[in-house]
Image (cartoon, rainbow, N blue to C red; front, side):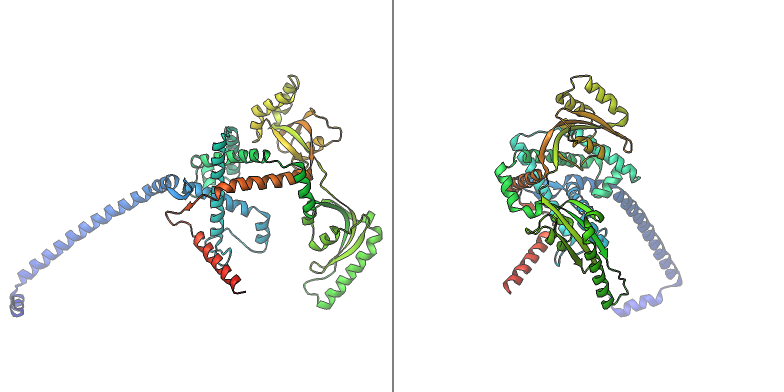
Length: 483
């Protein structure tokens, strides 16, 4: 059809034709609008339903689908989040972080934006540690299975639940809400139970491994001879004199004030034996480096005195050296039950009026104690002073304490009773420290001989740290090569 013909037909269209065309267009438009609105309504309803459904679906996926793999083990998002948040929470509760926090470093925000190194974020750092922890856990589970080691976690898990109930109530949350807050958005008591039980199991298995890795006496003595500086303790007296300075003091004023403090400390040396503060059983890490260098010098003799000035803190210290020694504080092997204060005396008297021996005391601990050592009959080996309540410590380490002694001690403040059985005096603390170090080293090597062989799989590309660590290592290698 030619353009002229189209134009002719358009020109001869009557008003009636135009009116009917308009009506048809409006009808079609209305039908289209109605259809669109119906679809919008349907789609809107579907969106609401999908959102509601997506929460359980997403949670199901997090709890059941593979997030990463470690060796042959398929790790879910729930298990990974649990490991990640344990690592993070432990660090946030550490003294190192407390020190950093006091200087304005806050890790409570988006950790994927906070840099740990030039290449790694804090999220990367915690993820790497979480993967390592998971690998170590599954290595120990494999080791225990091969050894045939078993341990019933029921009692320990009940104690965990009691603890969670208390902490959640204190925080005015439900247990599940507290667990989501602490261990990730998909956490719940039911979902975390198998992983908590695994942790409780490997805690016992780790202690078992250390017990059979105890070093020989010769190895203990050799380690001590090679590490005296960090193991030894000193007793000393000190008087500290602070220089009178302020933020507005000039350099000359500070110099004069520090000199005056130093002179004052020097003048106090003759009275240091009676006018000073006594510090006992202090390690090299318990004091400033300047003071430690003097106290732990091989030339030091009892009765030596000096004045040491710290020009950073603007303090001068008059110091009297008394002794350097091993940590000879005694330890003890004991059994202990922790029970409600209302039951303590009655339970103790029942035991006393029965067989009244270590075996029956262990059975009482298993049946009644609240703590996680109940399954072991309340046994603690090499218990050191300072672990328990002061009244318990005082009783345990009295000079006249004899094997087989037992007592109950009420703690009114906590509302509990400690039922205590003294087995025997154990090694001095310095030996226990070395045994712990050497046995832990052996067990670490055993675990990593297996965990280091596990291949880490990341099928969904959830982990960024491996690539960033590779970039960091390449940069360090390049920097080293250009030196």
